[in-house]
Length: 147
Figure 1 (tube, rainbow, N blue to C red):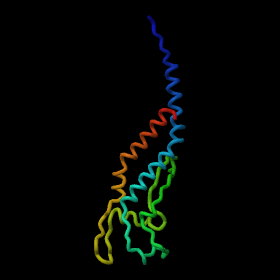
Figure 2 (figure 1 turned 180 degrees about the horizontal axis):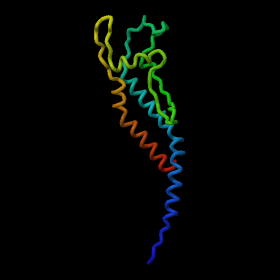
Figure 3 (figure 1 turned 120 degrees about the horizontal axis):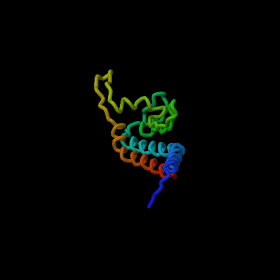
Figure 4 (figure 1 turned 135 degrees about the vertical axis):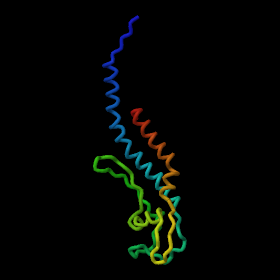
């Protein structure tokens, strides 16, 4: 009994399937990044406290009412120079400058007091690592299945 196997045909089929992956990936990538951004945003918001004594507080530009960091979290999907997409979760116009100070801690030169780090970004990312990995896995499975 002879079994003939045409390797050229198999290699051509594999090659065709591999060529489809970038198109499928690009289609689904933005959706996955947006989903990841929303997951991280909700975790960051959960990590941030809100002071209830803000009646007379002003934003850095003098505007009122005062805007808390938790209420000013933005999600943006961008592309770098090489064309790779990524998601940015950060503070909005009124609070972005505070993020590294609150996350990493700082020193108040007026009072000589050290303001401790909250590590809210690190904690949020750690809590959402599993969900982010699941979203990436779903993306890869979807692309591999040709959906």
